[in-house]
Picture 1 (cartoon, rainbow, N blue to C red):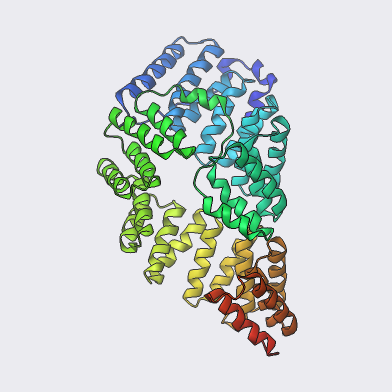
Picture 2 (picture 1 turned 180 degrees about the vertical axis):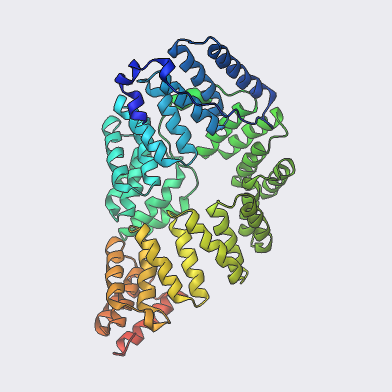
Length: 509
């Protein structure tokens, strides 16, 4: 649809023949007066053009677009999308409004529509770097890595050193087991943006896959929450429209994303001075304080946010996370349950509630939430694994197998899922569920993708289930040799115990 609207032929359509959407004027309760004035002025300008009967299409499109920009920057996405669609309908061939529409859809989690919008932009402007990278992002979010990689490769043809494209390509390479390429791409991105400490985690995992344990540990220790984004002139221009509290909020978020947490906290405090009743500012300030180690201050801000807005899911979730980190799972359950009650379709809230209940030994209570989590977030490998682990804890092995089979069907490249399924098929306490041949195939594929002692031990487990005890013993010796020499920790002890069983000969399963 959008590609058709961008086509020059569409421009021949008369304005009167175009059907424009009604703008769902947003509820501005809680917004600052300065923000309300901005939006109302833009809406009044649009209304004035509409009253002219047959206004020039370009002027009317600009009026819709200006209102859309303001709604967009203040995160009123539904109304912003309607404005942009009208602007595109009025002036086909102008990719700017479609680009903004794609960004609105991406921010709203509507990845199919976002991909359509970005593709339409790229038909008109093939060398638009931001659109190309964002298209890669939304394709990856849809679990379409091959298509995402193709777009990101084209992005590097436009800008060979773009760190955002390099980083996402590196993560895609890691997921398919191409560790050397993952190291190359992630290292290049990190060299260009050293503050992007989130990249240390996938880089560490790539080094682990290459068997370079020291480098892996070095990067995993440095792992953080700061990512890297593509340079985006249109969105930067959009953010300059903000006024009042929003100016400081955007500055604070930019500093937070770059890992400058003290600066972020300072900007959020300025935003709070502009609007002391802003719950979202208090949530952001709480997050920044948490990052600088001021847990007491973070809790104070989240609780203040809840006093202003009892329906703040973010405040509830963050309070639950802090409680869990401090080992207070009873308190964590209280907050995560409130977050779930406020927003039932939040998969991560369900997952964290289920995990907290599991840690408290309340397995039956945890199960509905760990069942809901992968349903709501099917691309989240951890959600599937947590559900399967709980079912194993409950002795419901057949259900655990079925969950892992479904996860493997949906996420065929997820190594953790394949590994868990291999172990269950090779060593389930319910012997009727065992399938040594399939377990061995899965285990060997996982080991080929990432040669770790744990994965080698799973190959040995599958071989033992098949009665191939000598081969199992050799794989187990290799696994034991790869751990710390002379290790006495629980994993090493478990490896030695299994080795003794394999060396004793059949039956060794």
